[in-house]
Length: 122
Ligand code: AMP
Ligand code: ZN
Image (cartoon, rainbow, N blue to C red; front, top):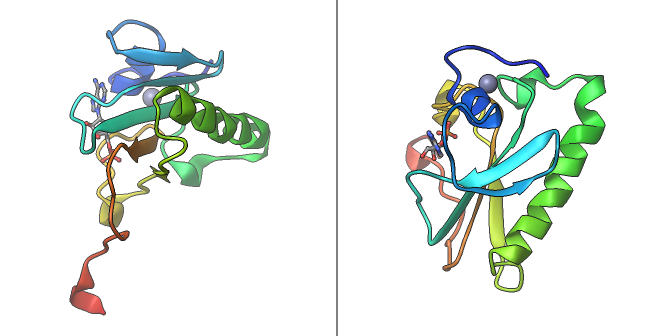
C-alpha cells in the first residue's frame, strides 16, 4: 500500500489517526467528514496515496470503480439513497482541494440546491 508521511488521509487509512469509519472496503475507506457541510457528509478514499483524480493510472481503474460503487452502498446505509445525494471530488487549486489525497465527498440529507460555481466569469 503506497502511503505518504504527513498526509492526514494516509494516517487515517493506517489507523494512526482516529476517524469515524463507516465502511472499510480493504483498499478503500469511508469515514465521516470532520467538518460536515451537509447533514450527511462522508469522505471516501483509496487507501493508496493518490494526490487527486489526476494521479489515477491504469492499475487504479478497478479500485476507483469499486470505490464509487461502494459509495452508493454507504449512501444507502446513511439513509440518503432514496432522497438523493451528491458525489464530488475537488482537483487542484481552483477547485479548492485542501487535502492532497484523492477523496470523494458524499453529501446529502437535505436539498443541496444547484451545483454552484463562481458566477463571476459567466
Ligand atoms: P477538500 O477541500 O476537497 O480537500 O476537502 C477536504 C475535506 O476533508 C474537508 O471537508 C475536511 O473537513 C475533511 N477533513 C480534513 N481532515 C479530516 C479528518 N481528520 N477527518 C475527517 N475529515 C477531514
Ligand atoms: Zn495520502
